[in-house]
Amino acid sequence: MNINWSITQTDINRIRKVVADNDNAFLKSRYLRNVEKQNIVINKEKIIQTMLMCLLTSQQRSGPNSTVGQFLRFDPFPITNDILLECNNLEQFIRTTLQQNGLTRYVNRISIFFTTNYTKINNDNWSLIDTLQELINSDSKLKERQIADNLANEFDGFGPKQSRNFLQALGLTKYEIPIDSRITNWLNDFGFPLRLTSLPLSDVGYYHFVSDGIQNLCEKAKIFPCILDAAIFSSFDNDEWTYENTIF
Image (cartoon, rainbow, N blue to C red):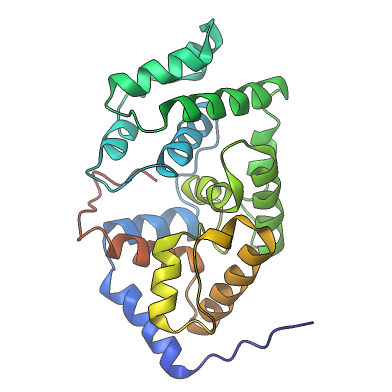
């Protein structure tokens, strides 16, 4: 059974307007990285930092001036592969490092998830890097979805949203985006054909359905979904994004 998405010129104009109204540093950075594929780095350190970002932002506010945002901008970053390889107790190290930097919400859960995922990646000899590099020069919606779905199944604490957040933050995806309450609320106000809630998004079939609608709408408007995501996401942060505080 197929769904026929009916998209009007009014819909297209509204999509283009929200992008134009939020043409800020965050959106420009997203375009250069995810669409133009500029300055993409896929290595162990970037994967570690991005995985932590996903686990942290699934539990608390992640705007540019938040505690999470400030922690993720540390240079040098306090959690590296070399440090982790020397740790006798990974969970304790992650938990203590987060707490020392003011990150206390769900810190036990986050440290457990990270340790499990990092151990799995390390034991697999970092073959994840090869998988991710497949997306650098790809223009395949299907490949993006397949890799995102695989990550959602493999990584603890992820699911469909954070697997896409992970790929998008690395600059690897244009079509598959992280869908959360910001996106569903915006789509409801926009007039999505059925009332959306964020709770069922943990179901992969429901997630695909909503994502298909977004992709069809963006295709008609000639705007990549990752750009619409950047416009919607930054519109909730009162224009706080600058080139200096844009990390992912």
